[in-house]
Image (cartoon, rainbow, N blue to C red; front, side, top):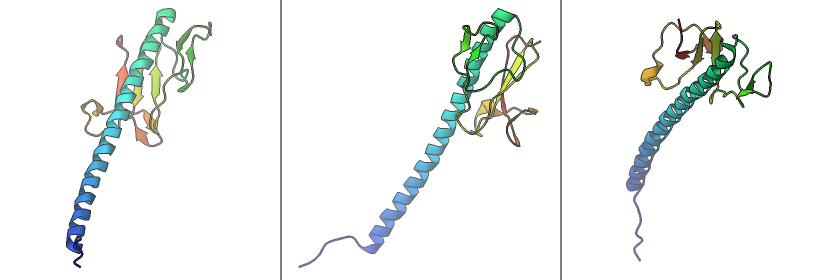
Length: 145
């Protein structure tokens, strides 16, 4: 009786091919995950900006720096029943959003992880989105002077 099967060389070739394919798959998954988190960050900043514009319609100025608490509701301090955002978004990764305002304008900062993102290239930002990590993306109010 002759047994039919794979030789050791054939098995090694199949294992090598599977290893190469899995390495490519993991790299693509990581890239897609970073792009998705960066898209979420940009969307979050747009959502926050809309809440700030609703606030400025009521008060004719933006809230002071330090007033926004990420992950908490953003309500009118004088009329808590007026809610501008049920819950301010938090960064989907391990970074922080930063809000800076002088009353007449604001800037929102975030850290984008995808190094190939064309919107990422921001130089001169001094705000930190994590200890020892400078923010690299900003969204500025449309009425900046």
